[in-house]
Length: 81
Image (tube, rainbow, N blue to C red; front, side, top):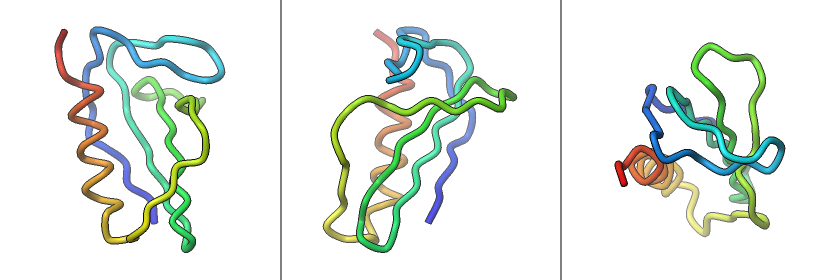
């Protein structure tokens, strides 16, 4: 399962594992496999390169929570200071 957000603005920035903090017009992609392992990636709108969000393995206990977790992450990442 893959969820890709609508465009959101992160004025305070989002930490990535590969390049540090990125900010501006961003897009979040979450992918959940059949075992509940959740992968989080972020990119600048229109860019081809996706970056991972730091942290250990993320796992959902119920695959039906994927959409809710995705929307919640977008709301947290897009909130102003």
